[in-house]
Image (cartoon, rainbow, N blue to C red; front, side):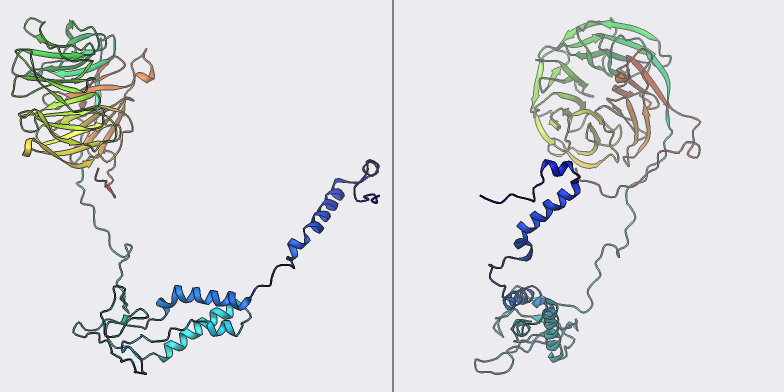
Length: 521
């Protein structure tokens, strides 16, 4: 029968004043006695061989630092001086190399200290430093020549291996902190007059999705989600005419500068040609398999380009209503189309984040630009500079165009800031002012040459609309470039003009900060 455990408290002890502290101390004492052998070391383990441990340490130090510590103080002399490698025969007792700073001593530093059993690892390291200092004292003085250190085992007189190490007494200072930073060569933006909102037009019953200006600069037309096209007077902003015929949202509209025709497209898969003398539809262009998002006219040929959710850009003969060609290759919705006289004559931006340049003569793609990471919803051509602007949710990019091989483009640079929203519209005038309209209602004004944003504006929705309806769908300049028209999701049309009373002193632009590290894409 085992004796009772007096260390375990009974219920009576607890009742007579045993505290929690005393119980914890008693438990800690029992734990300490149980694992005492682990604390004090297990006497059954074999003792550590100190000299072996120190020898191992000296070998590691020798392998890691021998090549660094064994070189002499060599300098670079005249270019005419050469390095002479000595030769030694098999029976030669002298040194095998006449190169200064190279010896045949391949002993392990600290080996004597390990065998003599120094008292601490500090003595071992001191002994290694002492061996190196003794060898340095016995080395001959180096001349003004390039010192070449051979690895151990190299035969004198033979060609040195690829691991030839060179040392210089005065190394070149290549630190980036010591090199003066060159001034930025980025073009400084010129001052632009700030643009101000001077007119808000209401009249549509739905989102205003598209806008275009008459070539005579007397009126402009807008297409809306209320399925109507309205004609407005440009000077007064008064409504002149309302055209009906679409059964879905009107997403694209264009006016011909050589014919009295206006073209429109919508989500009802229809492309219509309106005769502006009779204000009636005279032609339909059938062939799209889904909604049509973009429309453009060729400036010289009688052809019309449309693109939409069927991922194709269709080229129509304006007079015969036949489809001349189908430019296929995109993997997603075609969201923007622009056309010009020179190659590339047609450029399309798609939601698959690519911009394609098309050779209209051959009817095939001449080049594909894959610089964007998000869908491209807006394209714009500069009126005088042979260049292209493309807008996406990641950035606005500028490309220089060339006419060789059916049309090509070279990436120039990004705009210096990100609008951080889906950019639905791009417009540029001859003064170098670029306007981008975002899905969150932001209207940013950029300097075309430098890519600097000199003005930001946040649209305010008209009374009765939700804050979420502050989105810009399309924008365009008039023919003079001094009036800007934006159409928005709050069913309004906003007109802008430069502030004539502003000066560079009274209305400075947003401060320009030159870019430090521009990405190539």
